[in-house]
Structures are given as C-alpha cells and as structure tokens.
Length: 551
Image (cartoon, rainbow, N blue to C red; front, side, top):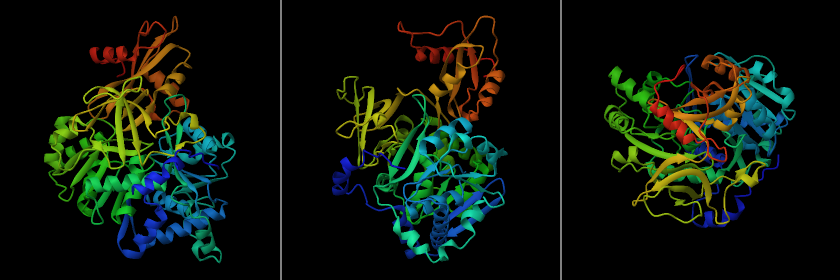
C-alpha cells in the first residue's frame, strides 16, 4: 500500500525545531520500557465475559511483540501492509499493534460493532491483507460474518481468529510458535522498522459525506499529542491507567494503548464496560487515571455512590465526546474524589483542548478546555474572518498532531496552505482562550461517544419501500448525551413502525448503535426554498413534542 500522507512533510521542519515531534516510534518506547523497568507490570488485560485477567511485564510484551511480528511476516506481511484488527480491548489487540510496528505494517483498528456494510468498505478501501477477529464476542459470530464478505475484499489473504481453534487461530498463526528464535528472526525484526513519519495507524471516521474516511497518523503525530496531553494532566510512570473505552477509537488507542508506553506506566484494559467491574479494578490495581465519554462517568459515579465502596486512588477522570452536565461534575467529583476534566478532540488530531487540573469545576461543564501545547485554534465567519471572543463561528485548528491526510482522498483533507484544518464544527472561544463546541456543521450525532454516520443511514432509509423522504436528527438523552430519531414521510397508503424499521436496517447489516431509536412520521419535512431539510426545525419539533411512538 502506498500511503498519501501529504500533510506530514510540509510541517516537519517546524515541528522538529519547536520540539513538538519527538522523532521516536512505539518501538523506541517499548524497548526503553523493557530495558529500564523489565519486571514492571505494564498491562493487565481483563476479559469480562470469561472472567479472565492476564498480566504482562514490559519485557514479556516486548518479547511477545517480536514473536507475533515474525508470525505476521511469515504470512507475507511487510512494510506498508495493512493489518485490520476488529478486536475488543485485550492483550491481543495491544500486542498486534506492537508487532505491526516492529515490521513497518500499519494497524487499522475496527470497532467491534461494525458489520458487513461497514467492514466491506473499510477492508476494501484499506487493501487490508490480514484481518484479526474474535471467534465470539457478546454472542456474535464474527467468522460467520467475515465469510460472507470475503468475495468483496479480494486483497484480504488471511483471517486470524482470537479465541478460536485450528490452523487459523491467533495462537496457531502468531502467538504460540517461538518465531523469535528462528534463524532469520532478527533480520525480520530490524530490516523494516518504520520511521517516525511513516504511517503507523489507519483509523476510519464515521462517514458524514456518504462514506467513511481513512485517517492516517504517524508516530510523530500521535506522540506529539500524547506528550502534551500527559504534561497537561501531570501523568507519569507511577500512574495506572484504566481504559474501558474501545481501543478501536482514538481515545482508547492513544491514551489506553500508546500512552502507558510513553509514560512507562501500567495499563488496565476492560473489554466490556461494567461500572461495578471498573470500580473493582480501580481498587485492586490502584488506578489513578481514566478517560471515557460522559455515560461512563455517570455509571461509575452511580456505582460508587450506591455501593459505598470508594475508589481512593483515582485522581483524574477525563470526559470527552459530549458535554458534561453540571450536576454530574459536582456529583462525580464528590463521590469519586477525583478531578473531572473536560476535553474535545477528533480522530484526525487526538485531544485538542483540555481543562486544567487547577481549573474550577465549573470549567468542566461550561467549556471544552484550552488548547494543548502545539495546538492553535480560531473561530471564523463564513468568509474566513477571525471572530472576536465569545462569538460563534466555524472552528479551525492547527496542530502538531494533525493527521497526515485521508487515505486516497487528499481532496478532502480540509487543510489550507498554512496548515489550518477545518473541523466542520461550530464553536466559540472565550476571553480566557477556553473553547466551547456549540454545534456541528458535519451532520453527525454523537451517541455515548460513538459518531453515527447520519448521511449513510438516511440513504438506507430511502431504500425502505414505505419511505418517501427521511431525515435523522438528534434528541437529547440524559445518559448517552444524544440518541437518533428518524423523521420520515411515507408513500401513499403505507404504514411504518419503529420495530419494522429497526428490522429493515439490521437486515442491511447496520451496526445496532447506528440504528435510530425513535421514529416520527410527518406529512412533510420542513425545507428551505431550495429543498434542503431544515434539521434545526426538526430538532425543535422533537424538543417540543411528547415522546414518540417507539421512542
């Protein structure tokens, strides 16, 4: 695969000169960790369904990374090849990324909720040669699903199954044979190591213009962000990070997988979120830091309050993905005894703004924080004129952690000649430099931190035989922040109920989290004179209406 990460080279000289890019890779971090703290527990991976936890020292992880790297090479994987990974949080996910980095392969994390539609596009677009999947996770048959899409992804040569048996299992193919002891192992592990400006991660955004976009990141873009993030939060080697957010999201990948190696800290990963389990892990492992979307904070604060069992070591809980209600900040701070940090970021950049540990709690519920070192932000009107403090407009950012571009879609990179990236969001910046996201010009609904690709789902609604026209808009939800409502008009003589609509979308292979949870049927949709649906009027309609049928 040839990666067109065209946004990297133009800013290299300045990023190095200003100390933003460390010019190191995850290989360097892993090797340093294994050399300086070889017996430290670097990873505790908890599998909730099986009730199993495995621990690894930094030295064991380095050895296992070498082993799996040689195993991947035996499958024909080399520098620049894409290894797709649709695994829940677990040691196999972590080791696969470390192994890919050993041989210059590129990791493509895929959310475990993706089904045939999403996977067929992403695997074909990325030209993935290897796909790692669980045998079963939360009762779903992943090998059965993948078998049904193999014909649509001709570049896919190997499917490796975690938790399965036989010749295509993760153990048989990668982790059991002592590949690192083979005569040519050292050559394999040294000849193709990537540089800090090589693409190391390919992560797809939920589509807002009809299809997902493949975000390309390098070690320099990722680590520049992690360094600034850790500095802002005063994290170090004595910290223990709990990550319950999926590592197939940038949150889990950068701050649950990569950051502990940067800090030489310990990570605890959880594959299925459960507040009681998370609280227990916090107590057992002395967790000091966690990051997740707002519903996770709601859950853990409620669990600690109801159980009466404190989490005394937890110092910081960072929330991103949706605004944090003021009462939740107050309750969580009191119940957990931790500082609640508000943040905003994107797959394309990682975290962009964070509140400060010394900020008043009010900042966490009224702002999304201040830019990290190496990040600039501005708000402009439609003509590009920078607006004064407090005025709402289009949000632009310029960051050391800005991505390398969208794979095979450079025309969509939305970055001008001066390096400013158009986020597609509306925002305001106050007089103290704190950001507040006020809306999204990109048509995305964020449900519990998960972006719903509105345009894609709307297109599928039009395929329903009863639907004449359709729009999907958000309605507020106390726990998840937002849920999706389908507002439709029907063809003459047709009827439609929510259950039938859900079944129709499931039949098309749509992930459950993307399916609207409310249905409103109207005689007509409000439109502009040019025919564009006025979604702000639909949102107001939902706010004014009583709960809809099936809602």
